[in-house]
Structure formats: C-alpha cells, structure tokens
Image (cartoon, rainbow, N blue to C red; front, top):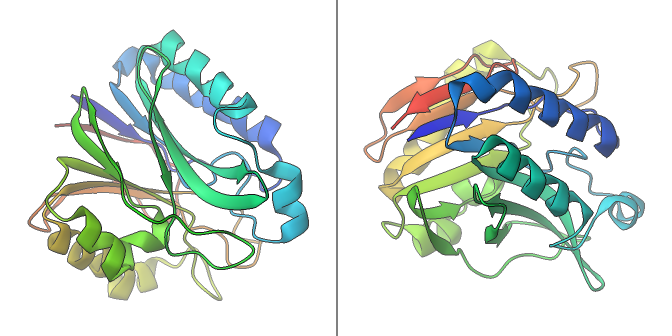
Length: 239
C-alpha cells in the first residue's frame, strides 16, 4: 500500500482556498497513485477555537466538505483522511474523517483531549478498511494516556492528524530535534501500532504557527520515514 502524508500549508479561516490547495496537491500526486492520503487536523480552516469561528466554520458530518472530499476520493481512486471542524447540534468537535476510494465514509473520530468551547469525544474507534484495522488519534490524543490505552494493539495503522505549534518561534528545528521529535516516538511505542503523523503548516509570521512536517513511526518506535520540520513537503511511504 502506498501512503501519502501531506503537511498541508493552510490559510486559517479560508476553507475555499484550502480546499483548492488540496485539489492541486492531489492532482500533482496522482501519477504516484497513492492508496491512502492523510491530511492534518482542521485541514480546511486551521485550528480555530473561538466560539464565533466555530459557529461560522464548523459543519455536520456528512456535509458540504465531506461531499467534496468524497468526490476527490472517487476521482483519484484513493482513501483520504482529513481533520475538520464538526458541528453536531449545539456541540463542536475537532474531528477527523476517513473516506474510502469509492467515496464512502468509513470512520469518524472526535478528538478526546479538548477543552470548551469544544466538546470532547468519548472513545477511540477502529474501522476495518483496505489498509487493515485503522484508527485515528487527533493531535493531543497521541499524548493522552487514556486515549492511547483505548487504542493500544487494537489497530494495524493509526493516523495522527496534527495542528501542532511551538510557543514563541514556530517552526523551530532545534527544538524539534531536542524534544518534540522524541516525544512522538515515545508515545507511539506505547501503542505498538504503526503511526502516520502529519502536521499542518502555517505562516510562521502568525503567533504559534503550526510547524508542518510528517513522519511514519513503526510499532517499536522506529522512524521509518520523515519529511523536514517546517515544510509542507509530501511524504510518500510504501508499507
């Protein structure tokens, strides 16, 4: 199976521009024929957490954005995982969705380690897919012991969509190598599951900008593939 992780360069608060960017990325990557494409947390809006932004941008699942992504999955004959802001009644979630190559939603996961005005998911779900048993841990859930224990050994692959930044300078290659990179390795080792980690990239002029990059970590904590910190360079991995 060929997996492509896209550390999407995101313009916060501009979903139409971000969706166009996804369309361009998929067209560019089409000759490589990926079977599974993974995008970051809140891939079309950026990670927004003020209530007015959630009321403006959050959508139901299924909804307009998922319909767009269903069409792209069918066009490019690949499964797609993406994070988005979900609205369910009066509640808001940072969620992630997997759509298979036929355009069918196969998995929806809500982030567990969230604070108001978000609501929090209450479990980690596993779906049987063409890639095997697939699960999602959204950003901070990778570092949440309860979320990790709900998943441990239950899946063959876990996708980890991030919108992760550093306080102060972000991206920060020195800090990445000094502390953050190893934190992912240590967390994945406790899962005993291969992890596909992909972070959003934002303009570093913004405060606490998401720092991009992607990595594949094996169940024993081995880094199997990695794209550069601070970039939106797509990472292709054949499993």
